[in-house]
Image (cartoon, rainbow, N blue to C red):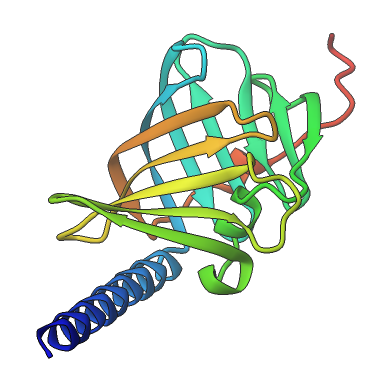
Amino acid sequence: MSKLFSLLFILIFLKFNFSFADSLVNLSEANWNDIDSMTGQFKQTNHDGNIQFGNFYIQKPHRSLFEYKGQEEKILTSKFFLHIINQKHFVIDSYPIGSNPLKYLLLENLDLQRHFDLIFTETTDQFLINLSQKGGNNNLEKIILYFNIDTLELKKWDIFNEFGEKTSLEFTNIIKNISISVDKFVIHYDNIDE
């Protein structure tokens, strides 16, 4: 009889924990969907340990710009491509975003459970959502989002490319829902000056 009560207790505990995780995921998703634009600073740590700093700009849907301090190149995303651009916004190189989870994060209305397989983890001060493309062929390509457990603010993300190489971005001095000049996201394809 005590085994039955123990099993019942474990099942209730697990159901409560899954419900709590679901509600945190839903709250984080709603918080993210309330953001139309965002700007701030970032610290990027590449898979080889190289650290860079800079400013970022996000304008949903699809657009983001990462400007690196002391570096000529910037990274700009559009609906289908990740572009490497120079200071005058001329394209140096472009890569299809394909099934990278970043493509879905920059949608106007993110639906985590529709686009991703989710794994939820919680610590004392943050919770993590591990996102991989639902039904995706490459288990290495994923993104892990880190949220402050009290404010539900995004603190960091780890992006893993198709080779499993991790790039981490920590975000600070975030300002949300402000006007960002459209010039930040302009792309020029024919650089006749160079």
